Length: 414
Image 1 (cartoon, rainbow, N blue to C red):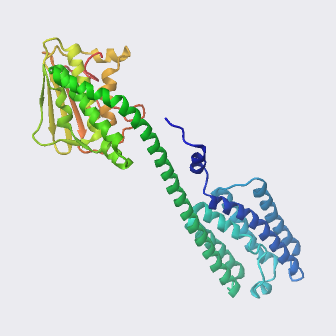
Image 2: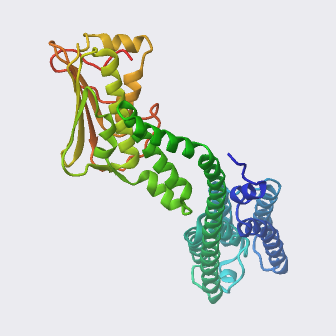
Image 3: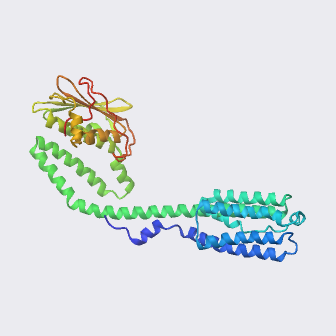
């Protein structure tokens, strides 16, 4: 697969330049706010009742500012700690100043230093985070002053606007970055698809077309192989000729008529019985069902005997689709399937039971005492299946075989 240019990876993996700029701005602002708070305390040190306590509060702010400068922390936990420190410093002003000085409108000890936490939450959590942090700071300011002053109201409104506006800008920046990253991924995917399309067109498509033509001329069993090659050629031509990646997705994931996909299994010794109306399933689900039916018929050929016949019955029950494969062979001896699993022969366990489990359906294998085996596949109708890894999906539901009296997990020893 073609390598993605390093410049593209840098854009996809790096955070938006506006966000990175805001982080640097917060680091600078925190020092400037600390300097302004220290200057404010110095300017009115004669009015402060407990100057030593005020200096101690500034010391805590300075220690945190130095810590996050030497070791930047861009997490909710770190900015929660900073918000607590800032709000505690605001409330500590009541211990440092006399009530009359506070009521007169004196600045709090940290002054504008808690604004850094507001902006930090806006960057981390968007406008909601910014407004929430600003509301907490405003509440602490009103508690500290007791009787709101014009400065308290103005500063609180300013904090709410600052947190909301910066958070909104960050939300827009991140969404635009995500859109750009998606566009670059699509461009890379288109370039790779075009490269693969040339390779497929020059080799695989021509080979499939040749097999289709020659098999149709030969007839018989070969004609069915030709029909399968023709179907795959059609799908590949659809994929390599589409410029819109969304249409490519629809081509491989749209609905398909299960009757048509199963038509190729009918032939000598195999009869297909299907309803008159279309049996629509998502394309990927239908392909998995067809593969499971083919695996069951392979076991009929290998284990049921040379003279065995098979019938494939397709039924649409509305809420689910059922496919039943019956044969007139010798049947499955009791315990044979468990023995095959212990020997590491997991063909049916993987090809049939595993596929149906991935689709959210069930598979039942039953063998009667007089011979013959029935494989029943049940799939939820029009289920939008996201095929998960078989090793992480739920285990297939296995039902007890009705006449043989044993639990079976597959058809034969394959």
